[in-house]
Structure formats: C-alpha cells, structure tokens
Amino acid sequence: MSEWLESAIARAQGINDWLAPKRAHALELLANTKWPTRKTEAWRYTPLRPVERTQAKVITDKVELLPVAIADLSAIELVFVNGQFDQTQLAKTLPEGVSISLGGDLDTAQQAEALHAFSTIKPERHIFGLVNDALAQDVVVVTVAEGVEITQPIRISSLLSQGAESHTRVQVTLAAGSRLTVIEDVQAQGDSFNTAFVEYKVAANASLEHYRFALQTGSNVSIGGSHFNLHDHAKMHSTLVGFGSELSRLDTDIIHAGEFADAKLNAMYLLDGKELFDLHATVEHAMPNGKTEENVRCIVADRSRAIFNGRIHIHRDAQKTLAELNNRNLLLSDKAEINTKPELEIYADDVKCAHGATVAQIDKQALYYLQTRGVSRSKAQVMLNFGFINELIDLMPNAALAEWIRPIIRERFAQMEVK
Image (cartoon, rainbow, N blue to C red; front, side):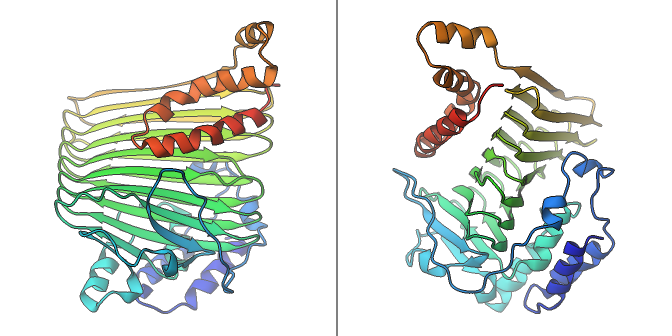
C-alpha cells in the first residue's frame, strides 16, 4: 500500500457522519486492495506516481471561485469550491419537480434512502471510487419527480484553487418518465488533486442528456467517474470531452438494468506536451433488447500518452442486443503514444455487435496541399484536426454547449504541433 493511500485511510477514519456505514465498508475494501502498479491491468499504462508525490492539501478556508461562463446557457448551478458545496451559488427557487439537497440536510427517511442508494451504481473495483466513498464529506442529492421535464440543465462544477485537494460526490435520480440534462466539469488552477464521482439512476422511460468536460491541464491530477443505471426504455446520451494533464483518469460505467434501454456515448480527448489521459468505459448489457452506440476519438501530440479501454459485456440473458464500439485515434508525433483496447464479451447467441479501433497519422500530403494554397501550417493543422473531431461535436444535442466548446477545441488544436 502506498503512503498516500495510508494517509487517505487515516484521514477517513477520523470522519463520523451519516455516511459512516458506507465509509466503513469502503475502508474495509481499501485495506484489502493492492495499490495499482504496471502489473495491474486496469492501470497498466497509467502510473500513479503523480498521486504518490502530490502536495495538494484540503483547504478549509473560504475561497471565492466562480464557474467559467457559457454563453447562451442558463443552468442550475451546483458548485463545489475546493471540495465544499457552495450553497450560495444554488438558486433559491428551483423549477417545480426537482429537488437538490445536501445529504446531511435531509430528514431521517430521505437520508436513509440516500444512504441506501449511495455507491450502488459505481462498481467497487474502482479504487479511487472507494477513496471518494471514504473521503467525501457529504453528498449532493438531486431528484427529478415522475413525468417531469426539467428544461434548464443542471451544471455540476468542481472548482479548485492552487494546490487544493477535493473529493466530491453527487447522486442523481430520474423518476419514471422524467427528462434532465446534466453537465459535469472540473476547473483547476494548478497542482491540484481531485476525485469527482456522479451516480445516475435513470428509471423506466426517463431520458438523460449528459456531458462531462475534463478540461484541466498542466500539473493537475484528476481522477473521477460517471456511472449510469438504465431501466426499461430509459435513454441516455453522454458526451465526454477531455484534455490531458499530469494524470487524468475517467471511468464510465453504463448498466442496462432494464429492457429496451438505449445508450449513446461520444468521447473525444486531445493531448499535448507530456500529458496523459486514460478513459475506461464499461457497458454491461444485463437485460434483453438493449442498444449501445459508442464513439471515441483521440488526438495526441508531442510526447503525450492516451489510453482507452472500452469493454462491452453481453450477459447470457441479454438477447436481441445491438452494440457497437468504434475507436479512432490520430497521432501528430512519432513520440506520442496511444494504447487502445476495445473488448467485446458476448454470452448471448442472438445479438448484433461490432467493435474496432484504428490509429493513424495526420495526412502529410493534405497538410502540404493546404500550405501550397496559401494556408499557414498552423491553420492547416487546425483545419485537418478539427475535421476529425467536429463530427462528434455536431452530435451534441445542446447547441449552446457545442458553440462554447468549438473555439476552445480550436485553440487547443492551434497549440498541438505536427512533428
């Protein structure tokens, strides 16, 4: 066990609140969990040295930070500042049919229900999910009532100041027939360390539109997860956008717990310098007639490293499943590295499934052609790279978010030089 994990366990043992039963279970599991090394398959390409040497600390002093504004987006703001939920940034009046509360503020019955649901969707195999179970000081509980459509997105922002450590947790429940959009994003100033996990229960005939923007760069260490449980005829459409940092790791799990559930996952990440980004996506088809469409695209430059592990597991009873996984990667440098592992594990005999992965370099002829037509090398690179990613941006259901992220990605491409 690493010194960092020993320290984290010691800190968690000193916390006594309504989450104590779940915390105790997480600590028991952590005590029997080996610290990941290169021999640990799930962490084979992602060394944890940045975690072991982090100097980030829990900051208890009040710090005023505001989320980055998104033009033309009116959202219900859920803001964490250095791990503490800032209730002053939550609207005093919420749309009818949605409730947002800290778990510690719920009444006894509601708290018991939230405690029962806590960490039931996120799998126990995620070591930093267990760390989050142990160190999260409270949980923000979001509930949408049956048949209610919330037109205003909920935006969950985790804001970190220089050298801050945070562990945030949100629990989202969509009752039958409801509709909701949730945006998750982390904004960090530098040398920070955070774990940020959100669990989603999507009931029968409910619909979730989901975004996660992991745009922290530089010396930040960010490890988190978005985990979904879909019931009969439930729908979800998730978009993930990531930049690399010293260590960025994101786990997403989609569980088809009901029949005719429909899941779409589009992910794109862009890395430069010595950055690392690791995306692990697991889809569990446990019931019949489910559908999954997964598209992941990655561009790496300089000496950066990208990892993708995409697993689709078709259980024995999941007949009539339709599942497709496509991973496309673009190398801008001979020194950059991409490790991709698409997996398809099928135990049912009446399914339609496919998976594939490609790794290619930027077309030097196309780059040269554009330059001969008077386009500068830097602009030509942006044009070619943007075309590779833009298709997934066009699939984002929220137009305001798509228009907000486009110039950010263009600026990112302008920094990523072909070598």
